[in-house]
Image (cartoon, rainbow, N blue to C red; front, side, top):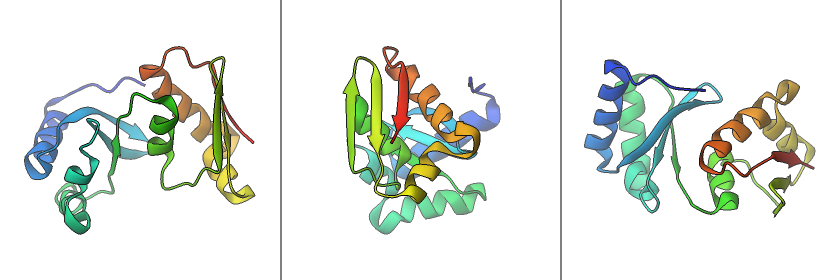
Length: 138
């Protein structure tokens, strides 16, 4: 899941930082959407008042984008990554994170077809939390 930072991608990151005045920590595709990860505490700044920055960027880039905030706490990081999906509880035990969703539909969206969404989430989380063994949804 390596993203090559070509000229176009660097231009997009530069545009993002210029409009939002928030610092990009990383850029990647998540569930086929361009995703900008910003430094802790900068998501509100990146979104802008009434999501004005997000809407402006989506219009300029002509695509839906996501903005998530990095967090050094694995549970908060996962919560930010899978938002707007709701979590009723989450436990982290010996590198295995267990997520409980409020209903079957939400759990299905977290897991995805053939567990695609779940594995993609795991891949991104492991980049920052290498001790993670697995994410389970129950």
